[in-house]
Image 1: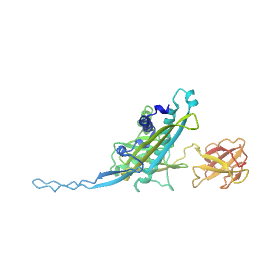
Image 2: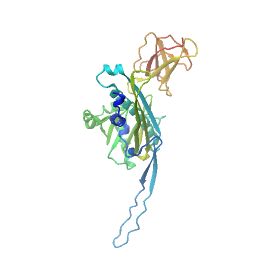
Image 3: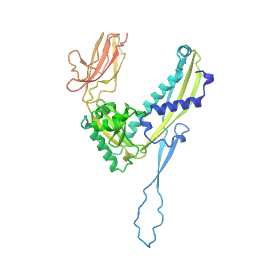
Image 4: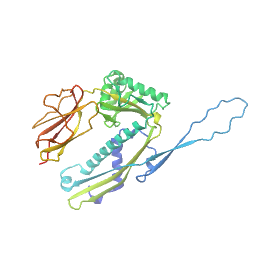
Length: 375
């Protein structure tokens, strides 16, 4: 890529095309109002028509005067904005056959899609009608291979009772839930085999009247996920690449590209979204992001862990020149210590492993970093 050959409209179209391929959830909702976006803060007015009264008819009698239609306006506000800014060094660009800018643009698209899908999933969960939840955060539904399909049927019935159109229905599940569905012949026989040749982003099969899609971006805490069931008319989403520029870096032999992405969404029909608060024992050790930062005093480090420790679990750590990650459900007692909230002494360069354990000291999540105490 050269700055002199950079055409913003072409590259914006390229990025939007990459986004369409990378999106999962944002590809399942309404996108009718996307062309109305011009800038951050834009508001799109969405008008919906009220119910039409159906009357009895009697022969040889006049019908009633025409009913005046009532409309309800909802506002879709473009209130989210994200940017990217990357450089392509001349030396790097000369040493690879595939244009680095093309590769970087694909990565930017996947990065944006992750952010927008997570944001939209949380918006839809929060926007679902109050009575359209199975389980709660405090008392989630215990899902197993024997009940995973059954809970999809319950979500279907919930939408049926709300007169949600059956056409275009979908359910978004995490990988763990998909793994449970694969153990049920009703899913494998009707969706799993078909899904092997499916090309749609995230599509994995068909079950209980839903197209099943898989995503890592559903709201979750340790061992608990939200499963969303809906149809493509429940929510409207709009996005646009407002600006994309290429420029020559002043102090480096490199080109750079920066772009601004804006988006927004509105839940239009809360009754058309059903949410399952699911808890399951996946049998897989979840990943923690562990960071070691210099502490206040010499020789101390401050440890941060993402995601935060959920209720009912304890954080433990172990540090040495080499520490293997624990196995799922491994009992962590000998050599493992409760992780303190304050700074702690650490040896520079040592491995530092943090694990979240349940009430039986069994490891459910873990992560590793290298100790970086203050010198």
